[in-house]
Length: 631
Image (cartoon, rainbow, N blue to C red; front, top):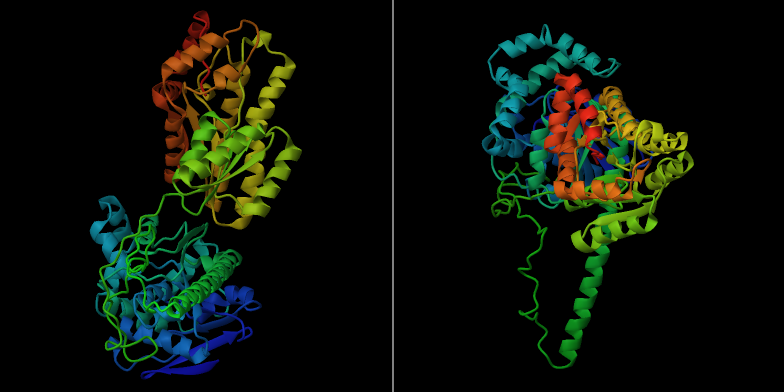
């Protein structure tokens, strides 16, 4: 430990790892101390110079003489003093809870923002961004966040919170940690917990109501969303993206103290993000150097020819319009004189720019059966909303056409691969290769399927085996292989299993198909219950009649009803793109069972209200030779 002076406060600073390595600065929240980061620091110190400190009034650090000195001006000045003391030009900042709030505030201040190589936020949205959300967010989202933030108002009450910290609050903290699966250990909660809790109340009292420009400059920002955080809503975190031009948003299936319950996941995300920020900075530096070299050569050439060595106004890039322009500097209140800058040195800023991000930007999506029909429409829909998509199909040419069209028509990232979902060896190679090349998928859509139509007595054992192998085992393989990887990664995810109206509507002419789809729906229900604790959602999407090539590609046993089925689906006029929209909505809202189109919704409702009616319809449908292909 060493001491760093900041005003009338002595900050206790703790360092691990080689100072020659890039610096990662871990900033704790309320009412913790630097010891809350012990597990994460241990995992990072071999690759980084890890710095932690107790904020003013917490742990080993001293408290200010004047309680008004818990305002952001002083907190941000402390951060600047600690960065200065390391001798490093920049640091990768990581903040949890109030540590994160201080990080967001630092990003809004010229002078300190430039010292931050990247910022990772965990469990603490910025107060400026939160103020904008509370004014302009949807009413129900704002109400949900206000309910979760009830304690902020309680902390403003005089005397009572101080008395609570001297009596019941330490026990409340311990019980809260245990509910998140965290066992108290030496250092957390700290032996100074009651005192730290009382002192830290003044951070709430001095800073709540902070408002101003929510812009954060061009610093790379990573938001780690703890999916079971009791204090922050997903809607609030999602709203922050509009202010961050270089954002990575990841999820961890954990509570508020994710760095205690899932330290290996949090440490990996911090290290990956810091590495990517450094790589991007190196690439930008090389590009800038090359541009400067070219400009200098051009200037020399003009001078040698007798032309004036001044920029050509017609080609100057002063007002180039781009889809991702650099944001203006912040006009946030300045910090006291320190590394964080001062009121005299702060640069006035233009109004903040709002950044619109696509719903699935930065996410990896795997779609099976992506060569045609619902699979193709789904792959294109995810790509249109910013996702990187792996188009898998048993037909290699169809998969390649789908991936190429994503790049050509949508300007997205599409990758093609051939796989037979019924073949476990191919599926294991497929999942292993995808994870090695592109990473663990965030979303998997198990869509590949086949239809064999005809009466039960006309189905052979091979017909049944083939149907079950593709429609059920293909889904099982996809869920098992990618679901395992999602659980091990620890960042949540979503699995969509495309079933059918046939999952709950019996049919005389689709016995094998209906059986397989009913099994897919039940499998989805079982998986949803098991994987919910890991932050992984599972949806069963059940379309009714959809105008896709499935009827023409089906196998017919007994009477040949191909042309009748093809004409029927064509007359229905329900495009695959509308099913794709339901799939994206199911992922976004984490829906369970999603019946699609009118007949799908009516069939699902009747199966629950009056199963006998569904059985009667099944008998009747056979008499009018309706093949009833539902996907």
